[in-house]
Length: 71
Length: 367
Image 1 (cartoon, rainbow over the protein chains, first blue to last red):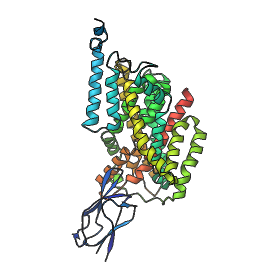
Image 2 (spheres, one colour):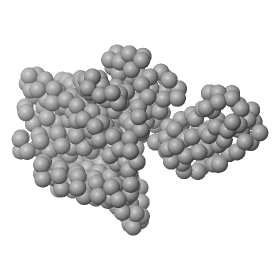
Image 3 (cartoon, chains in turn orange, red):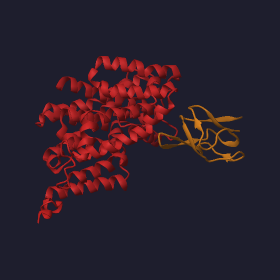
Image 4 (cartoon, rainbow over the protein chains, first blue to last red):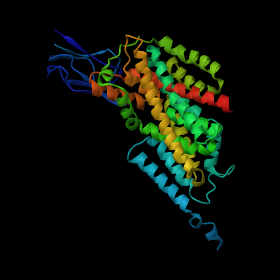
């Protein structure tokens, strides 16, 4: 079952820490979002494999935007 | 021999040397520790200049820096221009999506008023006490604005106190917030507010200007510029003006603001026991404001099922966005998936407006 990684808050993508095909565990750091000069980690919602990444470094994201999909 | 009389080196006093050390300390904090460097660096250098003898730099009608000070600060030009830039940088979305959090920004102003009364009991005049109390908002331009009108002799000390406490937000606030909240409260995840549309954001600065200026006309110089800057931003049709207000203009006036604030701090004005009281009372104001914000959040939680994380109350002081960052960090410490940053921005921005209104009320009553 696929689960989406969502942006917990709006900001800019500062780091993309995974690639398509990577295996992740729940609570692994997968992205770092920069908002108001703070780096805020976004964690994987479940165990699985990254099947899709929809953003790249520097992109502006809104709260709840889908950043990646984990299967 | 006349040349020796005109050399400053023979006119240096012990007090001046003490001020040089204060200046160097601020420069050190700004450059090495990065404590509010954009302000403390020009302020620190201004202090040094003000304490070099025979320069006439602050001589009324003649001195270079006196002119910056007179036309920039006494004429109330620079603090409103800083507010223009702040307005252009501010997104009112977080405030509009959770309007109830505005109360937290208002509650934190309690620090200003409590300190006002405390300071009068220490023998400060009403005008001086108001200027000292406003430090509790931890808002530099508002403090300078009020000091220039009510107590110009305290301007330098109050401005340095306000900017220092802004820089020290991450050190001063967390212990108070930790003391007043339980681990479980810090873990509270807040429900998202509604999404705010572009039209609502566009109307906000217009409506807010009308309401606030009608209620507290004395706050108009700061509020009007703040809201105009925000209207630039939200109108999306004057991006050049938004950009100028946020960047070029703000940077330019910051140079003159910092330099002239520093230059008001000559030894005679600054090396007094009162100044020590100002620093303590300002700190006290800031601590009370942090606490009242957190406590009000806890009280509000007694009456609602949609719980507020009480940490967010700590952002009611107007140090934007330092206070909101502290809230985010402490929330994530309790639960790493808890993101309070945007919730904290609501009371944080409300706190800025609250401090301006508090200054307007003081002006109305005391001027």
